Image (cartoon, rainbow, N blue to C red; front, side, top):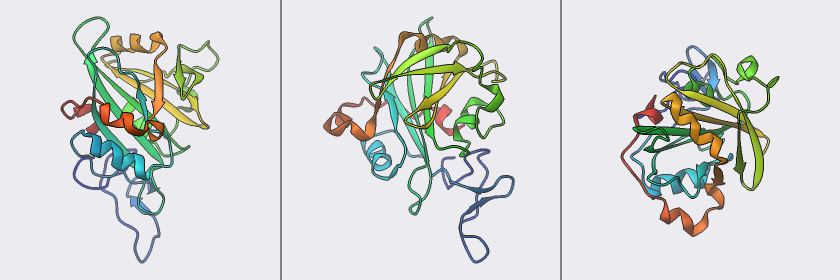
Length: 212
């Protein structure tokens, strides 16, 4: 994902709009909203995505103790604006060792969340255990938001998904045990509404998870 626009579903190189197509094209997935090149985490990087996205940019705020912002991704171009966003944060896992969290907001069918979740996608579909009680609950922009566990995800991560503000909200943690974070009723802020507090976000090194 890092150096050039790529497919949100598979990470492959995409072809820009041209004579024969008016949208970005992936050889495997057809028309897509391209993931833009990822830059090192900084307040400026966050501000750039805030200025272009049409969907929320979720971050736990305040961040858990010891956690920092470690990357941001956005799918969409100058014409469409951001149609999916992903924010990575890193810090101490509840059971010890390092933990990683990626929060994704996206429109139906974009496929960025499924990519980080490690499932086929583009949406949770039958992998979402909605017949069971929600596994976690967060407060997203002030609204209680249930999240269900996503089955079929790789064993190295915990994946949750639900709906917030009419869009998919995914939470993916590494390792799987870091999913315990989601049971603490995290408070998620849409950084588009953060105003001057955006300057207070602590930044760490770029997470390899946001590049996956």
